[in-house]
Length: 73
Figure 1 (spheres, helix red, strand yellow):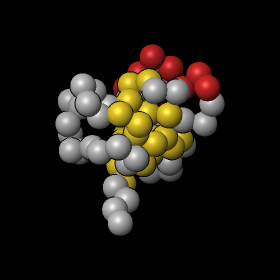
Figure 2: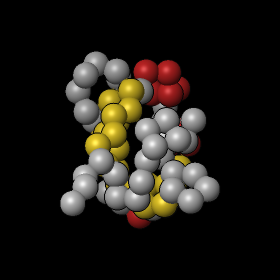
Figure 3: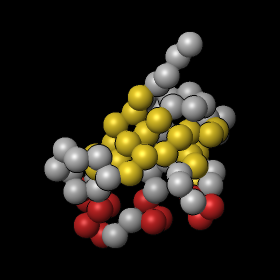
Figure 4: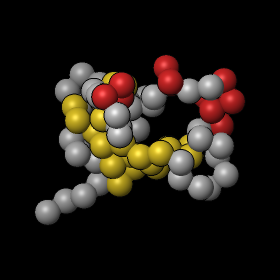
């Protein structure tokens, strides 16, 4: 599951909570050694699992669509 995109550190992950095509949230990957971790816009979401499952409502858990962007030099 965690290697679904072949993520690397500093990738941007967008979250579409409702699955309606509108991006509702964004985070940046901070670690990919044993699992992908991200930091979002507040301290409560620092170095947490990329899917943010623990912070979602029941509806968000079933509807969320993830998109990843890799920025390379």
